[in-house]
Image: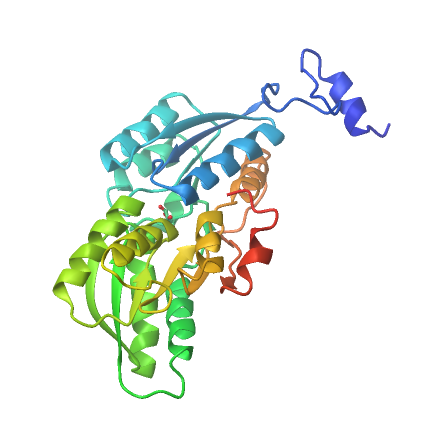
Length: 322
Ligand code: AHR
């Protein structure tokens, strides 16, 4: 028997239908697969989009999601993962606030035969058997791209380009790897001179405060590498307050690709945006379903990336949900 979407809908007793006659995903039936997911927090636009992607994909795949928000607190996050083991969920997934401190709880998950999937970020553990799969972006190559595009703008000119960097929260994988990628490309070509860095904790307010510090400490800033969009947009505010023309002098490169940043590009306030897709809910659920049925899963799944500039920003905004 072939089932149409409507046919499936009518078979799911007790499940409301939406206006278009499809299944109302606000009230889906619970499936047999349980997933404990621990999120970093709700620090900005990218994270919110990532949370939405995971929740929607769990609904679509009928996965019983036990979602916990760590609020940026590594200790709470580890306690949340312990609670998933106590609850005997089928699979545990988490986006680590920081890379360290995971050995004990993950050995406990392994002893309990609960597979673990890392999302978005990585952990600093030598024993790679502690997780079965990881899904996320190649953060170092995002840093490489930021430097390559920025540097290309100065082709045909002479002299060094003074760059300041606004870093994400200390101890998180993207903070470390985006900085390493950016520095590696800068060191190879020797045009970009990274003169100073300040932490912006991934937030708009943090980026604004960091930019103020960097302006106070440095006479000539030609370019800013902000490790995410929110901090870059905060830097725009601080630069405008200081009478500068962000996007032109200094140029600003950010990472993520939120609608707000693409709008910033279209308005000429940002120079480049390197995309880091937050939409990893579907690949995660597909791994969870395979694990539940005893299938093999890839150890690493990489998310998409792209680079946007003021010319391509408008097109990229079409249909973007975050
Ligand atoms: O780990 C991904 C990073 O975390 C995103 O770039 C940033 O916006 C988020 O807070």
